[in-house]
Length: 299
Image (cartoon, rainbow, N blue to C red; front, side, top):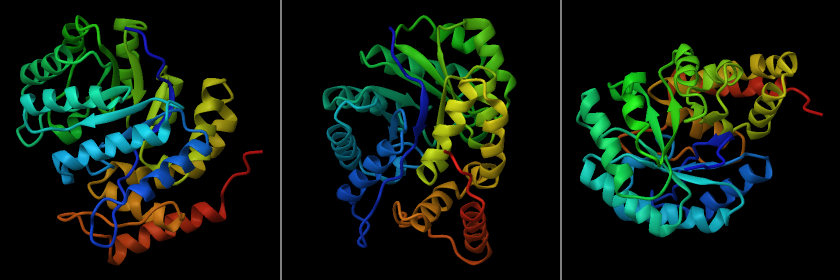
C-alpha cells in the first residue's frame, strides 16, 4: 500500500466551550489557520486532542467535522486510543466509514501491554480495516516498545505503512531505515528532537507546538529536507525551549495555553486535566514572550 504522507502534521487540540462541550466551530477555525500556514497534514484525536477525555460519540463527531473541514486538501489521520482491541477495531471501522485518510494507532490504553500483546493489537486493527495505519511507538509514555523485531512482524501487514517514532532515541530512526528501507514512512514524534530526526531520514514530523508556530515548523522541515541545515538550525535554536514543553506530563495544558497566548485557541481542558497555574503558568508565558520577542524572519 502506497500513501503520500510527509511533512509537518500537527496533532491538533480539541477546543471546548465554557461548558466544556466541544466547540466544533473553533476546531474548524484552528484547522483552517494551520492549513493557511502550510502544514502538510492533520492529526486529530491524538494525545494533544485529548482523545481519552472524549466520549465514543464525540470522537466520531470530531472525525466527521475534521474530514468535512479539510475537504481533501491534506491527509487527515485520527488517533486510535482505545482501552481494548475490540474497541479499537470498532473505532477503525467507523473511521473508515467517516472518511479519514489513515489511522495513528496506539497500544491499548490503561493496561500496559507486553510487546507480544502490542503486536497482536496492531495486527487485529490492521486486519479489520483497509485504511493505512501508522504505528505510534512511544515506550516512554505507554510502557511498551515496538522494537525492530516487532516491526519485522508487522511488516507482513500490507496496510501498516508508517511509524511515529517517539522512543526519544534518534538511533531508532537509522535502525528503521537500515532494516526496512522505504517499507515504512518514518515520522519523528518527539518535538525537541525533530530536526535531528529529519536529518537522519524521517520524512515527517508529528508535532504539538506546531499548533502555536506552524510557519516556523514548516520552515524547519522544508529547510532541513532541502539540505539548508544552517538556516534550519537558526530557527530550531529559537524554537527549542518551547518544543521541550511537548515532552512533559502537562504537555496538553502547556500547548493549549500557548495557543491561547497566540490567539489560535483557548486553554480549556477537561478534568482531570486543569489549566496551568503558579510557576508553571509563568514559565510557559515567559517562554512564549521570549519566542515572540526573538521570532525569526522567515522571508
